[in-house]
Length: 378
Image (cartoon, rainbow, N blue to C red; front, side, top):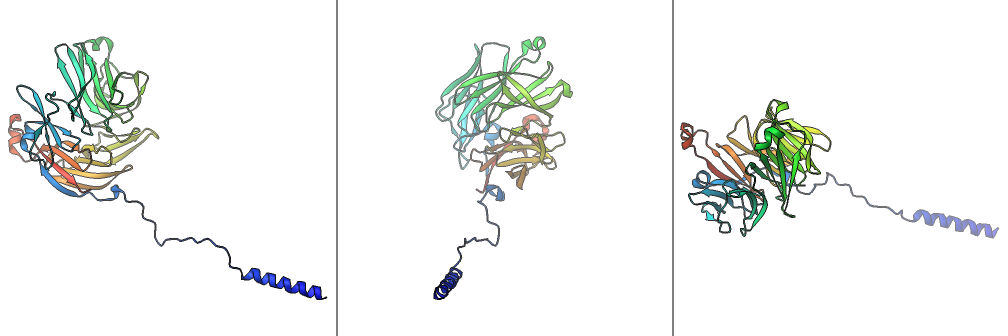
């Protein structure tokens, strides 16, 4: 009987001890509001910091080519002896010669990062395409043609400045062999120039431009096509062996198309809208309405554009996905003929004419342009 009593007491004490022990718990803190993500540049409004006037002779006597790697404006000047190169550094008041390059062709094209120039030179023994380093003037031969019927045109750069694309037409054989044009893509890293035939084009189609993507294998072709009643068409193509295979076609208006990345590109539609096409899912989207002209920054985070509704206003917006955010007018009172983003994407060079300048409407010889630089807040 005593053993039963002792056992009962021990059992009661054990139960009481277990009940008095604190439970083991995990602490979970739930904030009152949603957590704030890392700050994104696209969330900031577009604000103008400073506007600089470019000297008149730089935009009228010279031909503005773009920006150098040092964020200075580069222009070529044609004289009786040679075509010289000058740059206009910050604060964009006094120009100086580019001593590393003593002679350039008038239609040279500057790379988006401002480190190189690509030029076409016509020599007595043929035509050459060469690469020039703006820093040290080093010249690299890309290709050479001794064939007098070869016509090289429309040099363009990929946004990452790694590839150059251009067209080669041989007009003498065109009627006999149809569209005898080739697209050339030059790789800066490997220093190789590859040529590609075109598939899917007809004899009377006229190819006018090729723009290569950052991958060096995707190319946008602009042409006037017979099957589209000689309307302008953009054709998305992809390198396949030694040819460019068609993946997508669309009628366009305007002279400019642009890659956003290796799978997406934008183009102006005949209705005035700016379209974006994504080949990964075949979706076609409108990203802006009533667009007259546009230019992406090198990193495709900003877009500058003019509107059909008022072509004398320049807008800047921030790109987020398929959306253009914080669209703001950064300058009013100029009809832009060219828009150039600086390599760092903080300055926009605008070249154009004032619409109310009566001297420009009297004759072509009195036509004058002006240029200015809009610096944005970081």
